[in-house]
Image (cartoon, rainbow, N blue to C red; front, side):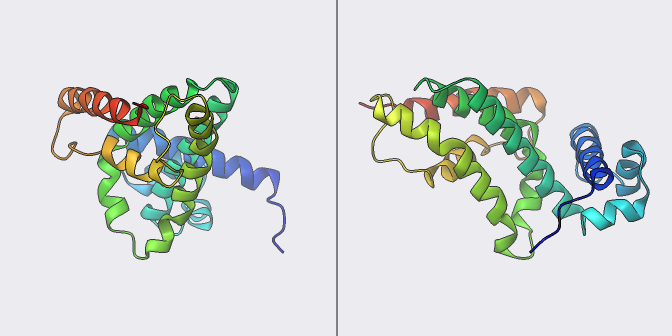
Length: 183
């Protein structure tokens, strides 16, 4: 049985995730971890108590992004069209974190990605089911396909600058969204 996290520890973790999200977005994956700790207002030891390494921190930032997407999706309500909004927002999340594909490819254990995959599946399952029930989305898709959708939305970014990433993302979204619709 795990103990509840102390309030100060929870605040430190939240500050680290915020600082990491900002700095990773601004400077990329090579940003010094000391700089992340400094921006969060904590010491290096606190960073390492929460995250063993850069990969663990990056995965936590991605999971936090999915958690945020899930909360915003729930706030939009139960309308079947929310699924398409979810996919658009997922595309934005993937595009903002385009440089992180190396982290995901180079994790030491495939099990390290399990929490990220589970959160994505949980966040999109309800909107997908409602869109399918309304006849808006193909019936042959399942929640596990959300991982494939995220992968497709993130493809084609390697070596691309921001302008090209936006163009690739717009085209990929169009193709994916059209492919999801019921015929």
